Image 1 (tube, protein in one colour):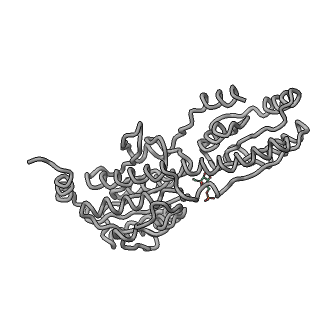
Image 2: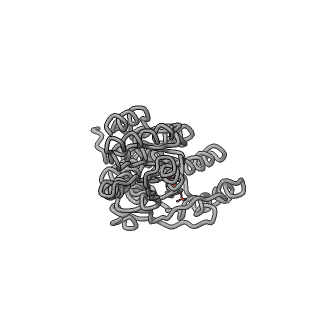
Length: 336
Ligand code: F6P
């Protein structure tokens, strides 16, 4: 018999004991999460599994807030930012009692497997579910921070970088016109990925990230030297986890004597229409997560490496730094 993709789907359905899949988004939202949910829902339905949506991340498991999802529930959401299932950070889920409630909800709704779309904290929670209760879970990397192992990109990062870059380009116009120093704070509590991308992409003069010790004295000296040669505007990108923009700006003014301003880009980086790469990534990863569950590959996280689907252990995927620090820093300095 020739195996068509339709035959393979039917064989998977027969082999899989997974009748009902749950999906949730957790932690900070990222553009493309809706596209990932859509892909999970439609891939699962295609293969004969029912789908339930868990509202507000793990909170919906603890509080039993579950909805049925069908083909139409996810119509016209691929282009929308945020997540229509909503998301939250749920400290209660981290307690023994909270997790027990979550497992009871999963049982009550006869959910056989769960797709968790989120970042570090969400992966850690999903891993606990798998480790302590042997509950079948698969993680989909959804965070603007791009700090998960096993994937080149996380959902939402590309959009966030573009949003930040667009804002920084505008600030550059003012910095240049008014001959000022600007300190711009971008998101990233533990990860300097966004900071590095926008620094290189905007032609910024300095970047301060949590992964690398920063030499402030060298920067002050460089600003003063540059000023003598006629270079007045200066853009400093700081990741939120590495320093506060207002403190950096105050210090720069104090030490160099030059006027500086600061701006915190904050949450504008998270929302907005997902870029094409984020939609495509989310769609591929949502489908890959369902495949994992249906094939019995539990406690895993899906990703894309060198443009191919990659599956790693959830525990291993929890955190990493994807910043090519040395190369980026060299380029930033060499190209001023
Ligand atoms: O994890 C994504 C992220 O945007 C981080 O970059 C940032 O530190 C954090 O979330 C902010 O979280 P909240 O929106 O809960 O303040």
